[in-house]
Image (cartoon, rainbow, N blue to C red):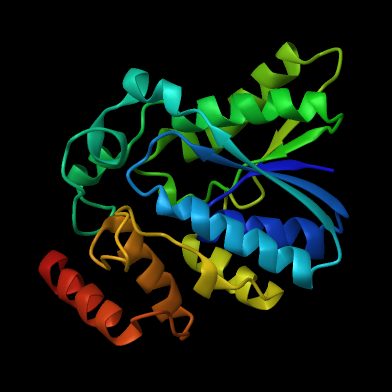
Length: 236
């Protein structure tokens, strides 16, 4: 009965992986509202979980966790502050503006506390290798250090922090998700909270690249590929 945090492609894939590959029959899912600009991801997380409940053989408890009160403490950059959402690939230095200060440490710490309450031993983090360069809290070193710290903090009721995708690229995560039948059409990746994805921000381009390399279609696919190829030319 693990606990995982959830919103987009990676975390949706992780949910299917826990149930279909690791055979968990009970899963606790946490989705956080920290007043992020792309708060629309919360509604899509609900759709993904509902689909999982209807199609997977598992009991899934989904909680929307309101931690908007911390916004003024961590508001900085493009996702929680006032800076513009960047366009282009994650490889650009400017994409560091999308870092939310200490986000994964905060969210995982809450998940660990919840894991103790519901008497489970594992918390899962959907970090993957493609996030390594930009996001320090998605690196294997961070997961290892956090797992050690969590063990020391929960030694009477020990909890482990696991990141099964940490050595996998986004493309490999998508490949796994396709094999498992993840409904990617229900997920939301865009950093903006508009009615449709912008297709130009780093996470939109990363999503398009992953899907393009796996030869599958996504919403607004033709326009997404045109925009992706434009940015590819500009950076080549």
